[in-house]
Image (cartoon, rainbow, N blue to C red; front, side, top):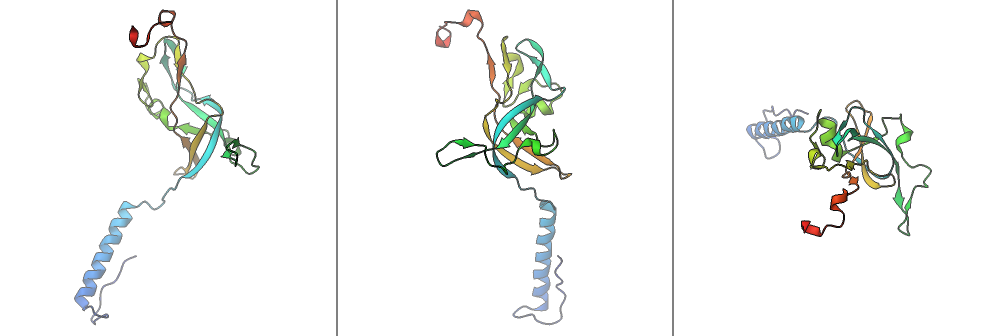
Length: 188
């Protein structure tokens, strides 16, 4: 809103010149705020959620542990959970939120730690900083395991559709090569 500082009389203790100066300062402040603050402020909703499934994102693969075309990013199914009075996770609320309440892909969540492999066309690093070439044969990156409880963020995309994401590092899992079995810690 623009403040009109044009006056020929005193307003309270202020002269017409002081009123114009105050109005100019207010108008300048408001103009700066309009530029700095977007019109639609997106406030995330936090949900305690339990992962209930994972689906490899098409085209997001790499050679991991010597195996070509290994999935490296997933979309996750989830449902809201809570901790009851005895400290046990519960999913029994009839009004709980879950990924299946919207279309098959809109309600699914992204894992923020998988961001590097989702963004890059040919990733060499997995989030949160694992060099793919350093993963030994017999090991691979795993999706977040079912029943893992995460703090889920719910936002709206620019087009108003829901966006769900969480941040949890993926495990690198596999079997030790036979030459490493029984070795002492520190390589001794």
